Structures are given as structure tokens and as C-alpha cells.
Length: 245
Ligand SMILES: *[C@@H]1O[C@H](CO)[C@@H](O)[C@H](O)[C@H]1NC(C)=O
Ligand SMILES: *[C@@H]1O[C@H](CO)[C@@H](O)[C@H](O)[C@H]1NC(C)=O
Ligand SMILES: *[C@@H]1O[C@H](CO)[C@@H](O)[C@H](O)[C@H]1NC(C)=O
Ligand SMILES: *[C@@H]1O[C@H](CO)[C@@H](O)[C@H](O)[C@H]1NC(C)=O
Image 1 (cartoon, helix red, strand yellow):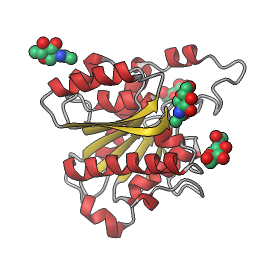
Image 2 (cartoon, protein in one colour):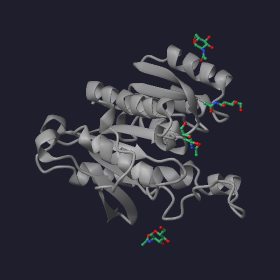
Image 3 (cartoon, rainbow, N blue to C red):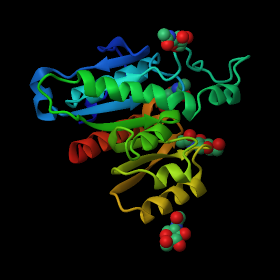
Image 4 (cartoon, rainbow, N blue to C red):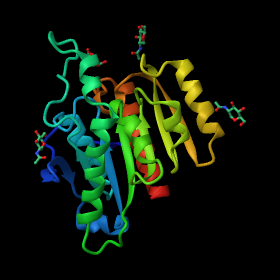
């Protein structure tokens, strides 16, 4: 149920370095892991990175659902500041530095880590579901394209997601959208739906009222509407992976 989502407290995962990429790894208890042996969740963060406590806690929440969770440090230790309006921080320059040419290889290293080390008893290849938030949402789609390593995708309020990336997705794709989202306004949301409608793989789009961009991770959980939406988006992703991985 929704209480599976940790919004505060200490994160329980560990950082490992693999192929010179830092990964936040959260493992389920062996007792619940058994049901999900052979599946894993690749957690792709927003611009605040694996350094943000809410990202670690949400990754841990997927581990509590039974999945091995691997979240790569997409920004090499230098994520965006918690307040994007921090003087001196240039969002455009940051996004320019972290386009697909820089980001895809980091994700590929995380996929390789999952396949190489997931579980001695798992039959390779491990079936990977990619879950992404804002910045990472686009990459959940990219990683579910042919040969990129994920077989299913979930994206909450994806930003910069391109038409070709939607058309290129090969696995089942699920989207959680915010009511207020300048990165995914109603017209763009409709266009994304039209593209998915035209696709042949299973898809799902859910719109959450009372939310704004970022709610899947950084909801104000003191606000019951936002808390409900964050938990619902988490459960949407878990149900998707439970069904398709
Ligand atoms: C490892 O990654 C860092 C950036 O995170 C880079 O500066 C360094 O050159 C890399 N080292 C190797 C051996 O690739
Ligand atoms: C959906 O497919 C139809 C028929 O191929 C095409 O005419 C239409 O432009 C497509 N819509 C989108 C949004 O891709
Ligand atoms: C959405 O944006 C409008 C206009 O900026 C604002 O009045 C409203 O409070 C916002 N709603 C949420 C849920 O953030
Ligand atoms: C979070 O929500 C609570 C309850 O609605 C509200 O009192 C508080 O001001 C909100 N905090 C922020 C930072 O918006």
C-alpha cells in the first residue's frame, strides 16, 4: 500500500563504483526478493541526482517491493542544486552538459552492472524495468528502446522527451503526469498520448490532479493531495513492473 513509500528517515542502500560510474544500489530482503529474482529496477533520477534523499528513499521503496534497484549517478557527483534558482546555476548549461551523449553511457554501465552482478541464482539476462523522474523520465524511454537494456518503462513527468523516443520504445510504457507542468503542458501530454495510442506495445497515462512537475519524487508530503499522488505514482510503477517484468 502507499505506506510502502518512504518520505523521510535514512536511506538503506549503498554506493558502489562500477566501470568508473557510481551507482546507488538498494537490495530487497531475501524473503521478498525470491518472487522477483530475475527482475530489477533501474532508477533514473531527476536533476537532483542520487544525492537527493528523496531519490534514495524512493529507490529503497522499490527494493521494498522486492526488486534489486540500481540508480546511476547521472551527473558524476555534481547534480543541480536543490534550488534551481541558486545564483550562478545555469540550467541550460547543465542540461547541455548532460545530454544523451553523456548520459546514455552512464546508464549502459548501470545496465551492465545489473546483468553482471545481480544475483548468483538469477538466470541472465535479468529483466530490467526503467523508472525515471523529470530528467530521468526521458531516459526511461530511451533505455526501453531496442537493445538498450530495459524491457519496460515508467516515467513520471518526463522532461525533454522527444517524439522519436516515444516511437522507439519497445517495451510496455507507463507515464504519470502532473496537472501543472511547464515541461509537459496539456498540449504536449495530448501529443504523447497520441503517439502511444499509435504504438503497438502496452501503454498507460495517468494524470494526477493537485500536482506539479516533480511530484513523483519531491511532493510536499505534508499536503495530503500531493502525498496521495506521489504514492499513487509509485504504486503505478510497481504494478507496471510486477505485471510486465
Ligand atoms: C572516471 O570518471 C571521472 C568523472 O566522473 C573522470 O574524470 C575520470 O577521468 C574517469 N576515469 C577513468 C579511468 O575513466
Ligand atoms: C498515427 O498513425 C497514423 C497512421 O499511420 C498517422 O496518420 C498519424 O499521423 C499518427 N499519429 C501520430 C501522433 O503519430
Ligand atoms: C498550478 O498553477 C496555477 C497557476 O500558476 C496555480 O494557481 C495553482 O496553485 C497550481 N496548482 C498546483 C497544484 O500547483
Ligand atoms: C506543504 O504543505 C503544507 C500543507 O498543505 C503547507 O502548510 C506548507 O506550506 C507546504 N510547504 C511548502 C514548502 O509548500
